[in-house]
Image (cartoon, rainbow, N blue to C red; front, side):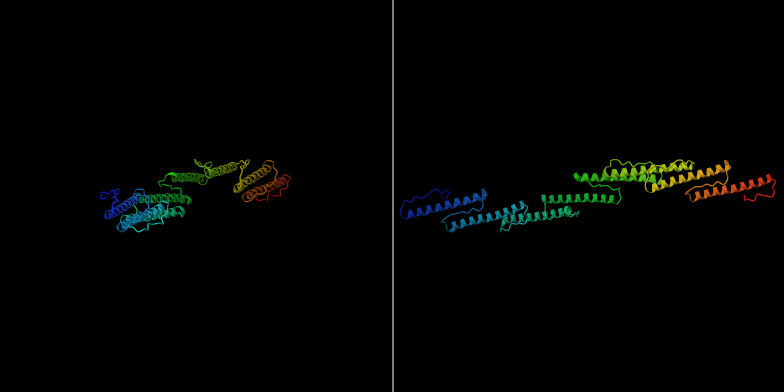
Length: 382
């Protein structure tokens, strides 16, 4: 028994004192054997198999053996409670529940483990709260520039915090640069572009907006050039040439070119007629399609040509009648003229009247002289 062999028994056939000693000794060996096997079982279940909650059951022991049994059971019970509480909190953390903590009483290294796990829960809770706050501010509320602040973290948690902050910082820079450029475009400033570093879909958006700015700049440059050529320099026939545009920008470019083409045709037709009039050719008229004020101008010029033609015809008729046919008394009749053309018509008619009066007075006197009547004289103003 001294060497740990509980298989030895004293013979119990003896009578008297030796028999009693054998009975007591053999009973003690049985209890020690049972105690040992129970402690071994509990130690194996808890320490090797990880089966918690086991208790040593040694019936009939008392005194020190009962105390030892109670101590082993107390140790196993404490360890079971502590490990299960730690496992419960660890399981909650694994499931994303950071509201639980280890509350079981502990000492020594178990206390250190308890404090470590509870500190970990606090840091994870703080980390989760900060990441959630930054995500909400940036993703839902549109408030850029936020940074997660998790005091006391290290290792992977520090790296995760830095990664979240780096992501938020990058996103802030990218969105603010994009907003700056789009605001500039909205205000008519096409000199700015997105210069911030970007990848993936943000890079695609960056390239799309920068291409849009280039196309808008080219569109604005072409429209400005045409406006300057047509409106300031008087150079007609220009067309806006904007490469790579489509949709509304293509439609706008086509509309501008259509407008410029129409205006060119109208102005050139008007200029052609005006040049013909200046060269004495009253046979031409403005025939190009027109609307609005251009139509009014077309109608005015065509009416002017008609009136000039009528004026020229009447003056020619009067001149022919008086100067060639010798028929005096004719008058130019030009309907609808006014201003200078009315004055010119009146002047021609006044000249014809004067000439008629003068010639007729001279003829009357010369006729009288031919008839021997020398009493008459030419009295007309001349």
